[in-house]
View 1 (cartoon, rainbow, N blue to C red):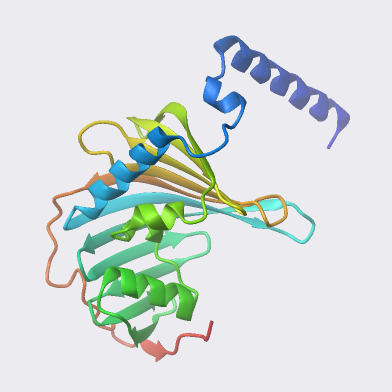
View 2: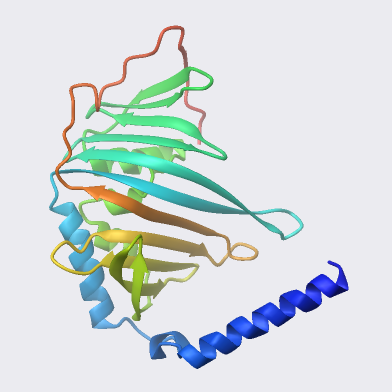
Length: 253
C-alpha cells in the first residue's frame, strides 16, 4: 500500500477510535465476563422458543461467508435466501449470490437440491421431520440449510452446545428493529445473536466466528424480513423437474 494511503487510513482509524471513545463503549464490551449470564440465556431461549412455536413462517435473509486463502487473506462472498417453513416436515429455501444459485426443497419424504442455471437436480429420501432432515443433510451430504440451526425445535440446545461463556452486549438496531445483542463462546466457536425486543422476540441476526481456523473466518445471517402468517400454495413444498432437467447424484460427504 502506498505510504500516503496508509497514512490517511491510519488517520481515519484514529479519528474513528476517538469518536468511539467519546461516545463511550458499553461496559459489557470492555471485558468478557466469565460463565454464562442468566439474562443472556433467558433472552436466547425466549427467542428460539418463540420461533419453535410458529407452525409456519417465511423469511428473507442476507448472508455473508468469509473464506481464508492460503496466503491468510480473507475473501467475502454474499448471497440472499428466501425461506419457507411449515412444521413439522416442510421446507423450501432459494439461494442466489456470488457462489450459489440453488433451490432446496423438503416435502416430508425427500430432499431435492436444484441448480436452475445448470438445470440439474439431485434427490434423496430423508427422515420425515425438519430436525431429522437437517441432521441427515449435514452429516450425510455435508449440506447446511440457510440459518439451519434456528429451524430446530430445540434450537436453544443446538446453539448452546459446548458454550462456556455468554453475556448481553447491549442494545442494537438490526434492519430498523431494536434488538438485544448477545455473545457466546464455545471451545472453537464464537456466536453472536441479535434478538428482537418485544412480544415477538425473533432472531434478527446471527454471526458465527470459527476461531480454530486461520484468521477466524465468519459466517453471518441477517434476517431482513419475517412473515409469521405466510400463504403457501400447493407447489411451495413440491418439486417438479423443469423441462430438460438432468438428475444427478449427491456427492458422498
